[in-house]
Image 1: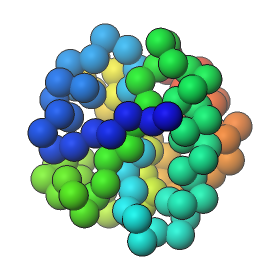
Image 2: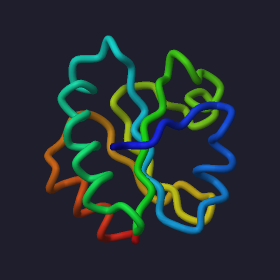
Image 3: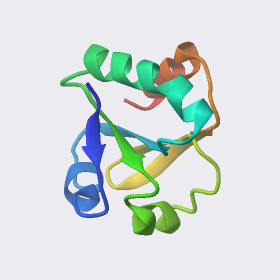
Length: 105
């Protein structure tokens, strides 16, 4: 199961992590986000212990969404050592997400 990231825990859970972190910026009302949800949850289980994978609700955590200029959802940010190293915008296949994770972990 994917972690829940918020404005309050983003610094600790994402920016200060010593692992690659995948952040899924989503909203409950977003159709493509709902398509990505099972993929994100699957990957969270598959990469547990190696890559930190979680979701951030843009409606509940607007300041983090704004800081990272998230204009379209779903947006996946790949964060390593506190820096965004890659991103994906829009719904994509599991294979595309896996390729990005493997490229950066």
